[in-house]
Image 1 (cartoon, rainbow, N blue to C red):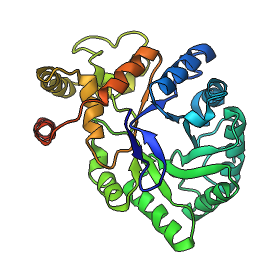
Image 2: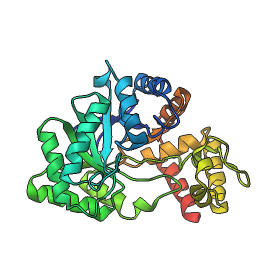
Image 3: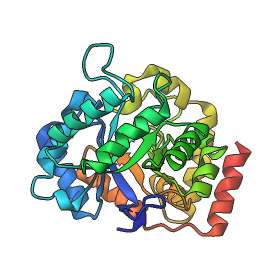
Length: 313
């Protein structure tokens, strides 16, 4: 397994990460533990979760799974979404951050969080307030590094410059929805991260499974898949334009002896600012496929050809 620096920090993360929003929802404690242990055995050290995944069950299951193996993993979790009722149960206020950090530490059964991320931009809280709370958690030893998720480029920029101006901990990473099918972040966010040394942790690299080839034109989503239970997402994803693109990318991959899944990971990892690609897995064999995809190193000719395909659509 290859490891990269998380942005311009000194932290090293595996280029393939494990997303855990299935833990507690589609997976019980035993299956979650099997996946976590297999990930560690493969050299995957980046495990990403959130306080809100399955109302905290994801964190609980991870905490059980890493007992005795805490030093083998980089724990990344998030704060913003509510897990209870009330007016102050969501967002990135000092109250919310401090309370939810304690809850995550308890559920994860750990003394510290390696990467604590604001899940969404909070329009009701000044970014300085959020950063001061996160900085206090770092100085207390409860958090090692901080980051964000689903922020626009200008929002990350505002946070970086607030940190610089006020002497606060800076974001070292951002998590965007980024894949061959969704490249909106290439307009502003990726160039900004390249310039400022912010690590990118793409989630949904397989576009909800579309880039595995499991969905076929004119057919209903297979039972048990992510799009089977989300008609709005299925209508948005399963379009003729996307299937045309999928076929071209499948042909490109097949001509080089690889699968479309391997291409989805390899293409993201060809981006210098990408530190780790976060992908979920419900079975150990899916982790094998994800890890193997990291072995395909695209050449400049490959990336140029893929770019031509993407631009033609």
